[in-house]
Length: 74
Image (cartoon, rainbow, N blue to C red; front, side, top):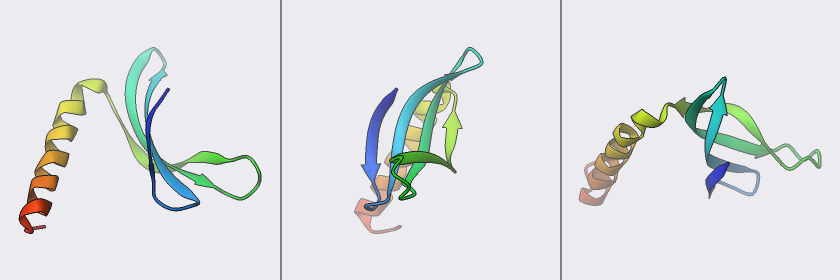
């Protein structure tokens, strides 16, 4: 189930999805690319998959990165 899409370019985007694999739930952040073959955007190997209990840690890290960016220290 796609939760959010971030466009990188006309041919690439990052999709954030909830997935289930072998009975376990995961959060998947993955680059999808339009290879120009008429099949639309397809997932690539570029991405990460995390168990949902690691999501708060990822959010904390992204918030810290945003804070650094806003302070101009990144």
